[in-house]
Picture 1 (cartoon, rainbow, N blue to C red):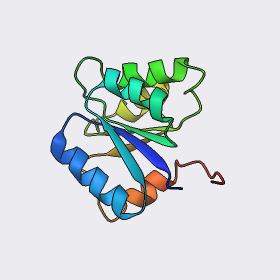
Picture 2: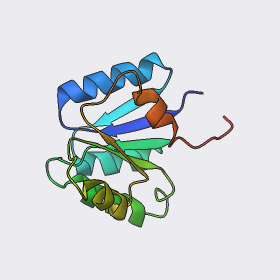
Picture 3: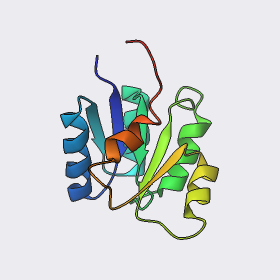
Picture 4: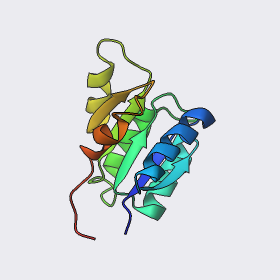
Length: 125
């Protein structure tokens, strides 16, 4: 069974690129275009990993991460911020909100899957 990755991203071009790369490597990708939809999708799908943009409509990625962490059914799912926020302190802010990792945009297609796989739990299917 393919590992499921939820990507919460409102930019269609970023979503297309990440989906293309991950599906090419055998991952099942589901997508949400805003934070609320992402939280609902996470509860429904129970992905193995959540990739989370920080600049989202309705609620930002920090609020999404905090809400996911506050739900006991979702709290153990790794969350990786995938964001163009690359200023000093942005990584720490994402980690403080509950993210397990941080990948800067623009992503590098040659290294992206390896970066993502560092956060996927090793679990027997």
